[in-house]
View 1 (cartoon, chains in turn orange, purple):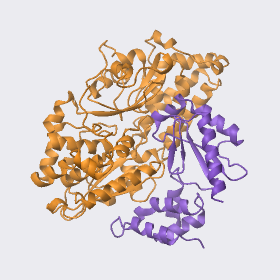
View 2 (tube, chains in turn red, brown; view 1 turned 90 degrees about the horizontal axis):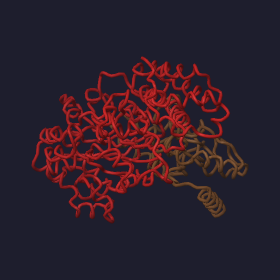
View 3 (cartoon, chains in turn brown, yellow; view 1 turned 90 degrees about the vertical axis):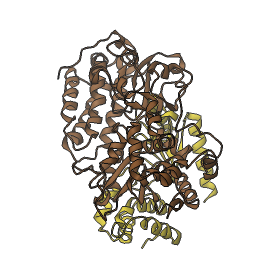
View 4 (cartoon, one colour; view 1 turned 120 degrees about the vertical axis):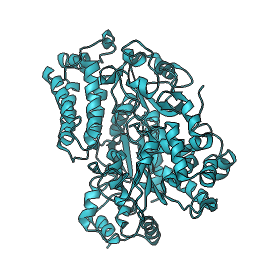
Length: 451
Length: 166
């Protein structure tokens, strides 16, 4: 069993409350940072840790912090992205619900490093009950002088405000989030300027994911080098994985990125194997946007190496034979599942969530849903499969924000690896309404469309 | 003319005060939540105009936001709104069957409200409960690990509550 840095204490009774959290060693990182370190030293420690953004993009957090502009007399802001909406992902919810003070503590330390006196948590609107949990934690921290004015006599002031969204996946994209926080539609902004220069209300802003900010606490407590010593290569520290789909033990797991995908799926410590004694068909390892992989490419890379649960190994082979760590939303499909139908639900999701600013995404997501709907319901043509491929190709890379890519990739990967299943639907319109294709794709390798 | 109760108005003021002077528009999304809760579960043009007045915004600025976000209801809804997730991870765990079951049980289609005005059925996209699928949102909370039996219990619970509070 690997080390746990975030969830180790998540199930101590009463840990949601300040007194218990403090008794278990909580808020030591705030004491250490504010009493013994300069803001720049805190940033240095985060850089040393190798911590990568846990929202999905995996950008080095310390580097993001060091880009923050610091013009004289202009307030700066830290914004916590708690708009967790990527299908398959429910890790931030778990962290905030069970150990909210860990996030608050990380926010105070990060706010100190960045010089943010007003810090905002933007949380998806549906997590309404978690807003209450966070606001209570904030009140408790304030009552104990770990928040508010002149924290621990350091002269540093920090207020944290919780802002609810109202249902929009796109607001997880940092510039759309900032628009929403300004009381507007969540339309992503054209970059540059980046938020580090012009963010919330045109002020320099850093936007970080919940898990990223929580990880700042163990980094300050134990030092960046200690954090970097966990894991492998550029996959340092621990990562929360939310596992779902057809497995025995769905839930949130903290892993140290040195275990194999096979162990994660089949060990009782984690997913506990495929539910109902079924066989593994496919997996989306990093949230719905990242490429789906058939079982054979999931457990081993194309080179025949064991695939590991870390950034590099999951991406091994590029999009031809690999996938991505993404947000850590781990979705398992068993042998009874239909890849066409599953892809259709994802296409519908992205059509619903497209903000409508860029034509390739606004129009293309709708076309993909309609075509997939036809194939799924026995009205597809063989040429539809190539048409789908062409549409996704023309969305990818041609939009202001990554939602276009996120919508294109799942469709591309489904065709790339399961083309035979799409063809079977087209050729057997009646039979495909009665039964699923099953595991025939194990015959692999299926041909990869050119382009 | 509709307006917030004194208590809600106080909450609105607390929310507005969290932003710097001149940036009060940032309170729009939270205030629309308050309005929807206070004015019958949906945002009528009057409710939106009222919020515009509170924040000194043009009504159009409020309409364009209210129409963007999926949590705002722009038409009247039943007293209890079943928002059932239908995205991939929930589909893998049988959300299609749950949606069909609710339709049959309440004799309504997706988007419709029962004749007695008690229930509305909506389908929604991923709510971040994938490990506890299938699921629905009911008011401020999630109902997870849904089965037909669980759905029956929830319907009964709503009916009992409605009878008590009438």
